[in-house]
Length: 321
Image (cartoon, rainbow, N blue to C red):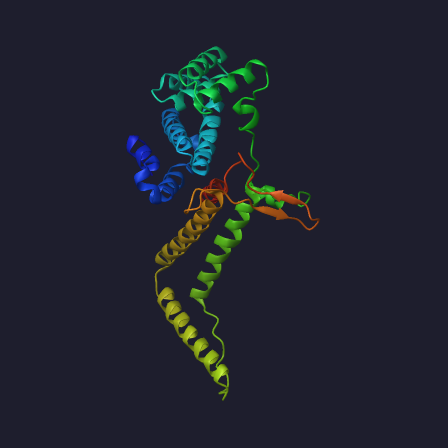
């Protein structure tokens, strides 16, 4: 799916005129584009997405939309890790972003450049610190980053954001690892709130479990319950007859539609939890309490967002199939 990334998308995602639609536009952008395996993207595609995300993230930050800005930051980290992993050719592309007309793009590119061309990165951070001296915004951030870098206190992206990832299935399967985290939570949602539900619905379509007709009862309550069961059984029977007369190919299409609906429902719910969906300006903290009363925050600050993790799980599952 090729989605153009240009100034119009940036305008839609950041315009105050569409504040009520910002979340859905952002979700569409994140869900439609970002799950694509980065290894399949060209350097140019990755750089274009990175530049756009950095611009959006900067503008959202200026507007005070912290949750949405954090979501874009997570996208920037993943794109940047893939570019850095590719070596010199992609890194030269990052250096080209140092000349961007957007200061937020230049600042992020300068931070990335510190680990493979420190002098150029420092030069741009110095310029930004001088050009935007007021307040606690971009200029202040550039100044602090530069000072920490020169003191040896600033970790590069590769040191904190580009760690290797175990497959979701193997993480959940390890019996000796009882600790819950965001990835396992996203995988559980895929297995039980999507796959399990779809399987149950399809099985019901293939052969509905119809209860035997109960004996007549004089009780009004029992008559009401019996009437409801009969009505439900009639609907289930009609659906089953319709589904079973479909060719196998069309039955498969129905299953795909159910899967898409279930995935999008869970994805939207995770967006609400991450603070990038719905009217609430903030995030929800999800805590897992183990059998030993151990508490684990599944979505700590500055970590991968749940809807991004869920998107990755779904993409991994599609690639396996």
